[in-house]
Image (cartoon, rainbow, N blue to C red; front, top):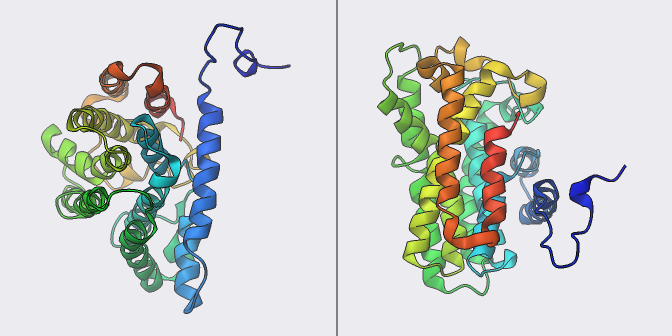
Length: 309
C-alpha cells in the first residue's frame, strides 16, 4: 500500500514535506562526506580508532542542522559540508571522552562497543584528541567558495563551543554534581546549555554564517537552537528512564545509577514532557518569518520532541 505522504501533490498544491525522506537524503550525503574526510594513514591504529567512532552511524542531526540553515539562508550544501563534517568530528570526540571510565563510564554507544572497549583507554583519548584537532584543520582547508572572514567566524564559534566556556565547562559542572541530591534548576540548565546546547547552537548558526546571514537572522536561529538544545536534553533524560538499551544504543538508566540530577528528577516525567513541548513551540516561533523554507528546521524540532532514542 502506498502511504498518502508519498503520493505526488495535486496540481496547484505544494508537496507535503517528508522529514523521513529529507533526513535519509541528508544523512546519506553526510555519511559519504565523512567517509571521504578521514582516510586511513600511518599509524593505522589511531586512524582506525578515529574512524571506528566517527563512522559508527547515529542520527547525524548536528551536521544536518548545519546544512539546513545554510540552504535556508541562500547557501549551498557544498559550502557547508566541511563544517558539517567538523561538527560531527567534534561531537564524536565528546562521545568518546564522555564514555571513558573517568567520565560516564559506558560500554556501548550507537549500539556498538565504546571506543575504549575496543582500542583501550589510551588510544580512545588520543582518538578524541585527533578528531578535535582535525575538525579545525578540515574547516580551514576544505571550505570552498566562502569568504575567509566567514570561515574565521565559524572556526571561532567551534572553538568556543567546545571550550571551558562551552562543552568542557558543562561537563565539569556535571561531574561535580554527581551524587548531589540538591542540584538547582539553574545549575542543571547551566550544565546542559553548555554540555549539549553550545555545540548544537553552533551547528545551527555556523551554517547561516557560511551563507552570509544577517545578524537578525543569526539571533533568531540562535534562539531556535537554544530552545531545541534544551528540549533535546530533557527528552534525553526522559528516555534514559523510559527507553531500553536496544532503543538507545547505549546503557539505559545510567543517570539514575550515577545519581545524576535530571529534569525528571526535578519536575517528574509528565512536567518534563510539558516543558520540552513548550521549548519546541518557542523554537518554531522563531522561524515564523521564513515560511515554508524553514520547514526542515520545524520538522527537526518536532522530531526532537517525539523521538524514541
